[in-house]
Amino acid sequence: MIANSRKNPNPRESLILRTGPAGGEEEADPFLGLGSRGGRPKPKPPGAMRRQTRILLFLERISVAFDGFRAINDLTLYLKQGELRCVIGPNGAGKTTVMDIITGRTRPDSGSAWFTRDLNLLAADEVAIAQAGIGRKFQKPSVFENLTVFQNLELALAGPKSVWRTFRARLTGQEREFIGETLERIALTEERGRPAGFLSHGQKQWLEIGILLMQRPKLLLLDEPVAGMTPGEIERTIDLLGDLEGRHSIMVVEHDMEFIRAIARETVTVLHQGSVLAEGSMDHIQNHPAVIEAYLGEPLC
Image (cartoon, rainbow, N blue to C red; front, side):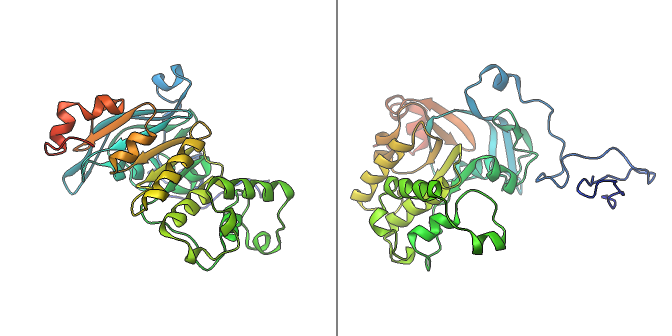
């Protein structure tokens, strides 16, 4: 049970206390009320993460079940800083659930999950995780259709978002320059004054990526970024991800194998029945017997 905060000489410093079984106060819980789920994380990240300084995302022995169905089963995955990781697998393999765990939407039953060596993902909520530098694009683009492309990016700029500041804020030269660079990067410079609702499906996908970039994320999670795109839009998205690779760590979940082949530089992870079935280069993956069997005997394109 959470008791009322005790009086503190400094009104800006209030501690949320837990009440013990006998009604006495225990020590202040530093995780309650600070963007956490109230759980107590391990004081230090796992040894593997401390030894390998380039690991940005650490998922180890993660399992989660929904109504008796094990959606993720003893999954282990590491992502390096600046890496573009492609994650593929049949429907129901657990790809979206993995992203839900990373972003705090789903809490696993067991395992360890860390983002950098400072944030225990299993103790943080969605807001704290987003503020730590993880941005996610869902399958269906979500933009403010009545606002212009420029206004969508302006609204997403990292920084305080009080109502007063939103209405009174004026962009600095540096902020305008950053928006301009992002517009060029997502190929929407000529559309900057156009309402987002008039963009094509592919352009809305790019705008949503641009909205994420406004937050200067360390890790981008992209769920089926080319679904519904024209061949020309897919080619432009390939160029966009190539430009972002190295600037950000990126995890891409996608069913289009030609697209995966075009963007996969290093490791492709194949999920099946909630576990990592295979990892390696695209050439290794597409000839892996277990992967072919998981895809119902159909060779990967």
